[in-house]
Image (cartoon, rainbow, N blue to C red; front, side, top):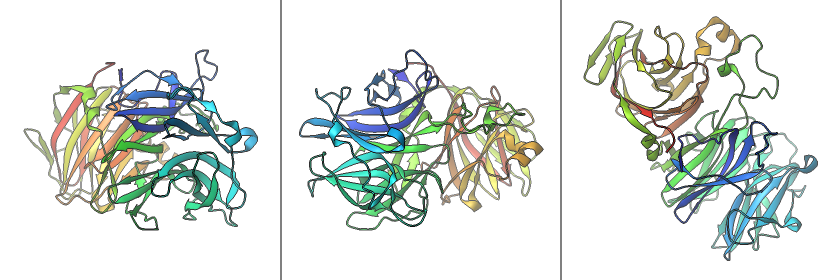
Length: 477
């Protein structure tokens, strides 16, 4: 078993994950995107691996299902798998059955392949099937990434088909059709937690990321929660798995390694400057439920076990106005920024700190920052705007300011803390990282170009940094 904070197989990117929780084990199927398609050892299609704790991962097994995202379900003791294919520009759903009861051998039921009807649904999009058995109806419901057949462009939806035998499907009206997206709502996932049902999907057009809506059991309409985005731009195609109140969200953080569209700038070689790829590293968040039915994202507790050795804190104020007492660092000035340099950061680390906001408009940490704290990766809270912000070193120069016509690189909403304290946790493994705030919000990001630098603290206004703790990670286990 291999330990991994953010899983990616050597020579490949982790694409869409199809997670299933079966007999106490997470069976993780995923779309494997080989970096070199001509690699002699490359096996294309779905791959599967197992994990009990989402920190240790077993060896991969190719299952030889060629196609896009899908789902699997057991009926009368037989496993059925659904995927999607794209022949000659068309999009079709495919059906497989396991002949031996295993999860690794599948036989295509070619006669069951089907596409959109052209009446309720447009012929352009038909993919990413998700199967749910409705026991009270004795029906199987298939949710799909689709487009409604309509006269306007905002026809992206979550489609719905219904079957009793997993072979013949009846087209129904869309399960979710907000007339908000001009592309299909990808990778739909439906699950129940307590008294609420949830629909998770990803969008790549009007909004870019993974979103969810909620519906109380017995209600007919989906509601948009106060924050309906799960993570940020650097997290996509997320689906869930779990049992009872334990449920996790599996998505991917994209790499920046392929210039697929020719957008990379010619003058600046920085990798942080580049465009996002399809696929990268697996990111797993824990899903919890708030009293109002909204979902919260937190760090899976087992991930901390990867980081075994505590790194001693050091503290070097770069500006006046700081006070330190034991493991509390206070920035006392108002209406000005205060900066302090701390110890060097390992390549793999877990960082936690409580940030107690006083008058500060912004306060946070700088990762892999230089001695003057000019260039690094900045994560900071803005309580007045209710968000956590990520900003890279590229924005710290005139060239970067001219190139990027916006101030915020990545952000995620954060609820206002009742006691004014925000617990910030960060997991990082070389270039890939994820930040969490108060066990309710997450933000994935990348750090490519700057290495071997320090941790920094900064605050624009008064704030206190409490219980700052840094641990470094181990290797293979």
